[in-house]
Amino acid sequence: MECDKCGADAVLHAAYSGLHLCEEHLCASVEKRVHRRIRDDNLLPKDATPEDPETWVIGLSGGKDSVVLTDILFDTFEADPRVELVALSIHEGIDGYRDESLDACKELTADRDIRHEVVSYADEFDIRMDEVAEDDPKDMSACAYCGVFRRDVLSRYADDLGADKLLTGHNLDDEAETALMNFLEGDITQIAQQFDASLGPFGGDEHGHTRGDSGEFIPRAKPLRDIPEREVALYARLRELPAHITECPHSSEAYRGEIQELLYELEERHPGTRHSIMAGYEKLAALAASEHRSESPNFDECENCGGPTTGDLCRKCGLLDALEAV
Ligand code: SF4
Ligand code: ZN
Figure: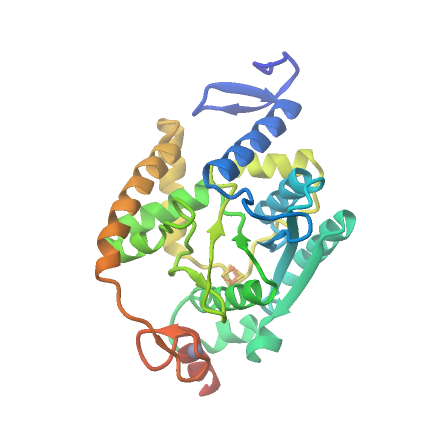
């Protein structure tokens, strides 16, 4: 097959657009969509100056998504002194997995001279995910613990690093899966919380806004959310980026796996399904958010860590207590 733009050998047929694209035109198309998303979500700095730049903290796991995001943001803002990039990686304590992906993070950031910070669950909470998965006092998936701890670390460190924005590498498939899961679970609160009016659709994170210790909301953004997973993977390979591809040994989100398969089949038979799910979902989320705001609960401070909670202890402190009692 030939590239529809230039006639060179095509590396991708995107059924949802009908386009065949060669290596060069696929990469250009991915970059163009990321740039458009940055513009459309109003991410470009408004009041920043070279003397007082914005700090954009990127959650960098070393997987293909966050590696591609970091690389494209670096190329985009390398010559723009109004944006300073900081990569933030989390070491969960998972043998044979995280050390390798951290090597990819180090290589990527060292080559581009990007500031890179690594935070570990061991230092922060005195836990390792390998042990959490084994002890499992709450009888839930490893990812359910891990997600709570990750959000806590990301928001605290984003605040410490003076982040103006917190960016993550979620792609179109991730977003469509999450949308469908929330919808099928009937979780309207979750849908509403995903909408952050300060940044346009989906600036907020999965469990409410990211709030640093200073009490400021740190806007979140997902500039890859228009790019299908397959194209992100191809981009990483074609640009020879140091991405780590092994799956986490504790990854066990069975329900997400089912949704993934379902979406994959739907997309095969009806190209464009993921895009249309997201288009409808964003409108729905905006409606749900305006409804939800009037009835959103008042947050108190966690009596242990001061984080936001509706009870005495926040979720993170509750889980840490349970782990300690094992
Ligand atoms: Fe944590 Fe689950 Fe991701 Fe593994 S797959 S790093 S346990 S969230
Ligand atoms: Zn707490």
